[in-house]
Length: 260
Image (cartoon, rainbow, N blue to C red):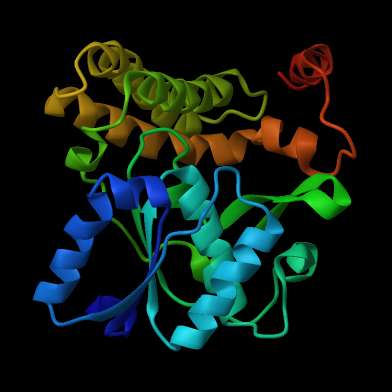
């Protein structure tokens, strides 16, 4: 916390992690350090602009603090938006396209509880703007996590279906990078390592969710896998960003074929 310049924490998470006791484990650490905190556990899956705006209002009311994002990709994405909007009191999440040159948001610490999106490595989140029937990138250089804490013990309780779904997300990030026409020796090196780690660890983590070594390899592979995926283009998000209707599977396949 000290490295963020703050001694207060605004914890962003979801109700599922609160009910599972994961949030309490983090709060005990904050208590032991004498850190004042508030908890916002209202993040929904695939958060929408209204969900982010509600979190930002609570963060502004709490006052200056570091934002601690505890959860999967949805929580991490929402926390980036909350952080940015907290530093820009007149803005709302639907203004995402105009916020890339906004004032700095609150500093962010990311604690992922899944191994898939790699959202702890970048400064933007994908948020649904239901009013405009599109997804938007809500982000800013200032909300790229200052610190990412990768603790595989936090993923031990993740059910097998969620382990598979998030693990395949990480695997596709690496494969997408390897297949990209814009691949470079650096991106290929990262992606090859990511695919190797994820493909080797995912079957074991799926069969035995208590295997800490497999969980650790999966988490690290997912984190490294995101770096080349950014360079590769993140086609899936780009396809839906400004579309009034979600494209069909055949349309997505056609776009991927043209790109790769």
